[in-house]
Structures are given as structure tokens and as C-alpha cells.
Amino acid sequence: MLSRLPAAALKSQSVLGASRSTTSAFRTRATSQVRFASSSSASSATLESLLTSRASLISVTLFSAGSIAWYTHLYGSLPFVGEVHANSLADDGLHPTTYPWPHKGLFDTFDHASIRRGFQVYREVCAACHSLDRIAWRNLVGVSHTADEARALAEDVEYTDGPDDKGEMFQRPGKLSDYLPPPYANEEAARAGNGGALPPDLSLIIKARHGGADYVFSLLTGYMDPPAGVEIREDMSYNPYFPGGAISMARVLWDNLVEYEDGTPATTSQMAKDIVTFLNWAAEPEHDERKKMGIKAVILFSALFAISIQVKRFKWTVLKNRKIFYNPPKDLKH
Image (cartoon, rainbow, N blue to C red):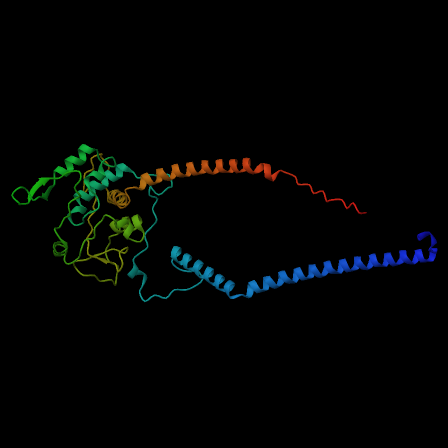
């Protein structure tokens, strides 16, 4: 049949096939361009809707408010916003200086010799007015005293115990399990002995005051005469680090007030440093052990992380390095 067709018919058929292929190619290109255009327009529409949606605006607002709140929590105020206070800076107290305490480092522990001296200052000076309810004699063992030393200190104090076989209370020497005795029997007796002011318990005083150890050290060493124009009552002292400046507690630390067992000069700053170190330990007795456990945990988890990375690479290297070949099926009809 093909042999009988004229040459002109064959040429027209070839031209028609070429035009059809060209038309299909143009259609394919146009379709691909439309697809690309639609995909780009869809992505731009998605981005625009994401920027203008309420959820995005709420998320950005919450993130900004959270960032501002966290900054003000850390630093107190924003650098570009002025503050208006009803009270003066003297009402809040002078900001204490930041001191280089030997236990502030990540790998540093308490100075245990300073803790022992600080306990001596507390016993001979501070214990006359302030209690230390959360510290027992056994807490001193292995920290500042031996077991025999702590037991001897406890036995010097008489504790009320009982009742006995007759139903009566009795006095006994202290034991390691007893807590340090308070200076007053109750709160009313403490106020009566201090002109109406209640001496605070010193167990958590470092954590309870803004500035911590720096504030307590500055307070103990910051007593001075009131400046010109400042008047305080006769039964009060002036200390710029105390809020308001007028404090009921008089200055208690003076040079050579105590005699240290190890021969350390008992200057005012040395005694203040030792008592603050002791109170810092009293507020956080687990400080040294916590740092030791932290170092062990960092080493352990770092090793486990390295092992997990190696195991992951070993398990997944077969899948990540494999090659996939695709052999399309052959069309046997053509």
C-alpha cells in the first residue's frame, strides 16, 4: 500500500508529523512554564499569608514580649527606656560590689578553712542574736570539723529533752543530731531583746537577699557616719547598703574581735569574708558535691554522645552510601 502512494503524499505526511511534534513540544513547554509560574505564585502566596496571618503576628508579639521580660529579669531595666520611681536610690540601698569569691568558678569549691573560721565568728558574735535553724552539729563533720570536734561542741550545749519515766522534762548534753540552739526561746523574746526588731534566721540569708554574698559582705563592712542632711534615730545605725540607710543592727565586727585558732589576723574584712563564706555554705551545703556530680555528668554524657554518633554512623553508613539504579522497562511493541 505504501509503495503505491505518490511522493507528494509522503512529503505531506512527514510535514504534518513534524508540525504535530513541534506543537506538542510547545504545549509541553507552555505547560511547564505554567506549572513553574503556578508553583512560584503559590509559594509567594503562602509566604504572604504566613506574614499576614494572625497566628504569626501573635507568635512574633509573644516572642518580643518574652525577650523583653527575660532581659529585664536579668538586667533590671531596658537600656533605651527611662525609669520613673517614687523612691530614690537611697531607699533601695547602695548596689554592692561584685567580689571574686573563691567558690564562684565552675570547678571551684568552698574554702573549708574559711568555713571553720566563719563558724567561730558566728558562735562568738552572731549567735547572740541570730539563729541557724537548718544546720545541725552533724553537718559540720567533714566540712569544717572532725566528728570528735563536732561532738565536743555539741556536748557544751544543754538541750531540753523528755519526758522521762516520771513524765518530766530534763536537760541533757547535746548530740550530733541536734540542731544549733537558737538565742531566744520564741519570737516575742527576740523582739523584746532587740528593741522590737526581729533578727532574721541566717540559714538561708545568702539566698534570701538580692546580691547574695556580695550584699552581706558589703553590709557588714559598710557602716559609716550618716552624711550631711541625713538624720536617723539614736538607736539605729547608718549603712548605705541597707534599704533606707537606717538599720537596727549596730556594727558588730571590729578588728581583733575574735582570736582565730590558725593564727589568721582577725581584721574586719577577714571576719566578714569568713562569716559570709560560712553562711554561703549553710545556705547550700550540697555546693561542692553538686559541682563534682556535674563534672562527672558532663564527662559521662559527652562519652555517651560520642558513642551514639559512632553507632549511628556505623548503622546508617550502609544506607547512606548505597546507589540506586533505575532501569525502565523496555517497550517490546516498537
